[in-house]
Length: 226
Image (cartoon, rainbow, N blue to C red; front, side):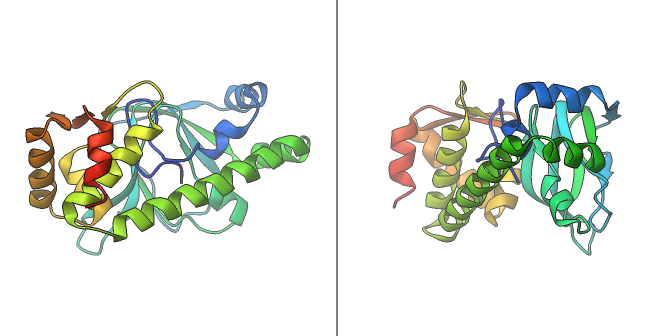
């Protein structure tokens, strides 16, 4: 999965697999599909479905995760414009392992597996690019998992915010709620609120509705090692 979180520009730590394709091929695949529209809270697909293709976000934001037995949704990735997901299920030819829900009104392309696979077979260089992107995804995902497992709650929050800040190309504003941060880190909302409040007092971050702005990235990085 591409970045396990995100800023306004992108939502995953490593580049989505689709972005590894040449721009001409990306455009070709998009032009052959119809945009699909989803409303906030609408289910896009369910765990266990056959992967007839993968998804690419033109606009809006999507949460990927799993619904628990009690109906609660546990997010593992927050995706936005330019992100893609579902390519791994296509490659593996196995049922989807996650549910996907629209966080906001969304416009999505559903790239059919048959067209995607045919495009890769006709362009070996693109396949190599995809394998490289997949390797980077795995490396970055392992780094995020390691960061989540170590340190105090405050250190884990700081480490994840630094990771998200580093993934943003032009913005230090991370579009994520305290509830979503808690889900991704396995922390309560109260713990997340305590950490952000402490960081804000030290001038490291600035909180706003549904977002966190990184003010002092280096200072926050020091907090992640405490």
